[in-house]
Amino acid sequence: MIKSLASILFILAIQIQQYSCSCPQISRSLEDLSNNFRSVLGRHIPSSQFHYIVYMIHFAFAFIAAIMLTIQWATKKGSSFHKSFGIFMKYVMLPLVITGLLLTYFLNTNKSIVNLMKSLGGIAMTGYSACIFSSFFATFMPTKNYIYTSIQILFSSISLYLWMTGQYMLLMSIIQNEMFSFDWENNIEIFVSLFLNGFNQAVNIYFLFTRGPSIQWKSHHIRNSIDFTQMSFQGTMYVVGRDGYWFFAHPGLSNIWIRIFIQNILQWSFIAYNLGKYKRTFQSIKKEIRSES
Image 1 (spheres, helix red, strand yellow):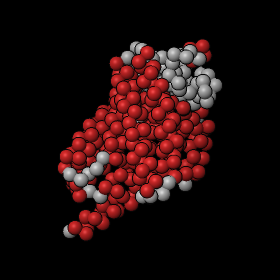
Image 2: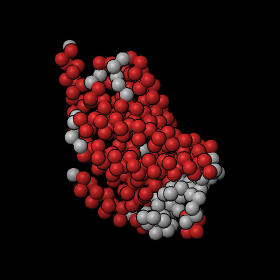
Image 3: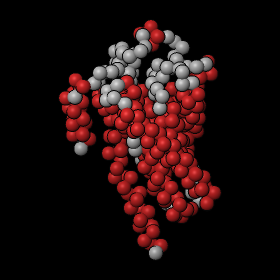
Image 4: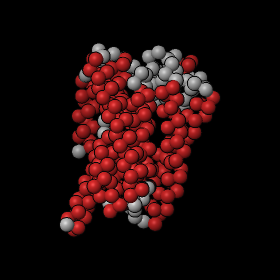
């Protein structure tokens, strides 16, 4: 299934390549890209030394997190190692989440700085940061009383609202801008990458609101760990798809569809692989409800 989907998307991207006309790093020079005072992959020039330090910390912990997530998903679920490693990983992930929120702040307050997201990137990344922050804490936070469940409902509600706002603004911009213009391509890339993020937040709100502390924590944990990992792929692969220095020759990939394919193949494959697990979390909650009635 995954191989078939990948083949279809790749063939589609090749067929419509002639219609794509822009590239992600069109305004940047190779000398500028090799400047040490820049973000490692995103290539935007930080607004201050503190911005640069935060980005470097975020990049380092993102690299560590990628290794740790791979190990965690490879271990037997429910084993003592899985549990203890998960607790350890929670504290390692915290700096990644905090620096991500700080970078979102910089993106919204320094719009004159050249970056990959352009005008609507700030609101879109605010929704992204809120969703990944919400799923991260929902993965580990207990649900044993109404205080915990109420906090999670609040986080998920804010995240869902910000995600919907960002996606709506991106969609309106996509409709209004000329096809294959720089803004059109930039906004459709973000829109596609973040398309699924609100779904799990809505699911969290529904089950936490209707079930409260009686919600099955294991199912809640599995759903949100899948969602958090999937969103981790989004942030990393969005930047990789727009690379014009490390992975792809300057000025980067000029084909919008190839970029979208690269940016989303990991999260789509991960979702397809874990779809059965996600479905079983719903079934276990339904079974729990039936046993109580």
